[in-house]
Image (cartoon, rainbow, N blue to C red; front, side, top):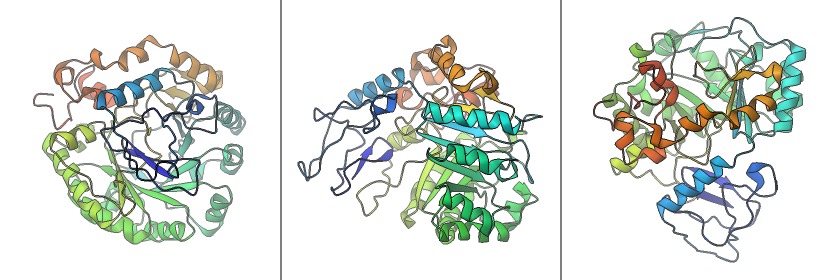
Length: 417
């Protein structure tokens, strides 16, 4: 059974039941169980949802007030004892030179240190782990590391150039899903954005992964160079054999302001993604203002045959909230530096000290506590009616304003930034 909650689809433990459609303006009602698993208490349940047996309630549509849903989410986030996910850039090495690369640390952990980090991650037991780089398939000892992590939900992000029959088998045997980064449906644009890559080679490699059932999705980094190509990217995703595309709003990188979409371009991109999804490809739009924009512009996402929307759960984002997740997960740099966001110039500690130790300190951080509170925002964000469900991208805001609490300058709903 799947339950639609907020912006994600969640599996429940009952395999032979019919999906309930929990509407986007609703929250689970009184038919609750002691949903403690997300906080490390009872792993047989998921803490961000409440189970409802379809055999008992076959056609039930459960409605609750939006404010109660928001309060429920807030309570969950405050009670968190483990991160939603850990995003680990496992190596600084890469065989490409991408225009939107955020940059890498000058060194990386040894294989011995990396194996210790992997063991700690297993102990911390996040909902899932992203392995990326650089190019993770260039990491010395990668297969040893992945074997340590294999009991977790692992997703590996690759540029796709090094995929071959041997490592496809290894990935499949370990139960690892793969995301391929593909930033244009046009060879000349793709190869300009990802210098050193071959469009046709990566296309073939993506199809091989799909044929083996381990291609999770296509990652599409959105910029001025490709936002008009969204419809063709949905078609390309379908032709490769992937069921989903993650549209990743560009985050701080070299020449960031030259590549970042304007508010008008973001609006065009959001509308284009919603229209393009009518071809049956699910998508996730990685921007905290996405759902606020849908509400403001009265855009309804197309429905799949299951009765669920195309805005599916992605392993890129936390599933229990639509807002910025700064500090709700751990990002680990190749050299072990731990940050509250992949793109934040803010170091909380180093994995050499212990990942769990740094996570415990994160939960007590006054800075992170303050930044998670919507009322600390200034400017247009402070007075926005969608603040609770958005909060603005903190890392982008800091990169553009040098202020962690300012209004998100890229938000299409903001008139003055």
